[in-house]
Image 1 (cartoon, helix red, strand yellow):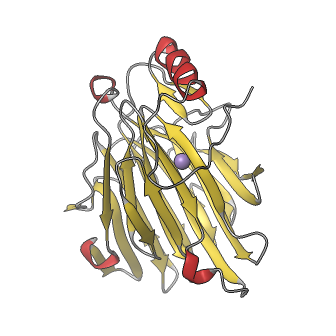
Image 2 (cartoon, rainbow, N blue to C red):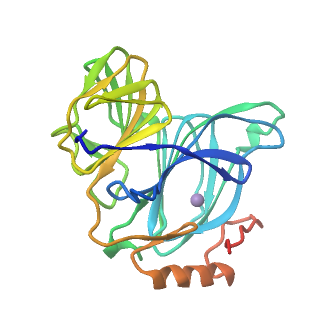
Length: 290
Ligand code: MN
């Protein structure tokens, strides 16, 4: 990382029944490239009585990226998508001018047993000219994502471009997101492999970047890809992400992201007045927070 690498510790946030570790937004660093929101879910246990049930809620101006290491989440949205996500697969929903979705523990896992849940819930802001696009949903199975092993590191390119590979996820700006696991003490090469701002979340294990040791539950951010050496300890699990930042500022309120405060104000009114599209056969409704 550059010598100015900023270290951010994940902060506990209660999202209904579930505690998450929030990395972004952070007051000193609102975004990393186009990434505007990063929640680390778990690792934890989903038990009878605390199964995940996030009812209908809207989004605008962003794409959501759900990526799991353990467990399953059932996604349904107002486009009619109905998809269970499993570890290593990607759910990519672009909200554009407006979409509504639900996220729940799948019915077949509501059998009284306890299940693990571990993964990331991520929002990526849309570029200005696409903020009002029609919503889309795409799912990619684990096997469809580029993966390779090099220098004691196992890579999986979840989204975007990096390391001379391209993910099939239809992203809307220059970005990258990779899951990396080490099988020995080694070096992670970053320079010339990805472009833009960089964040590294340490899910497990530790790294040493420019003489700073960064351990589990922390993220390091660099404003450029001109990085110094990143030493990775054996059995370390990382999320490497980032990309080119936008020129204009993004506003964020609840589940809404926009370069325009008026667009956010309109989305609030529309959600209150139930003007958003609805998820089929679902009566849930999450109120707009005050
Ligand atoms: Mn959502």
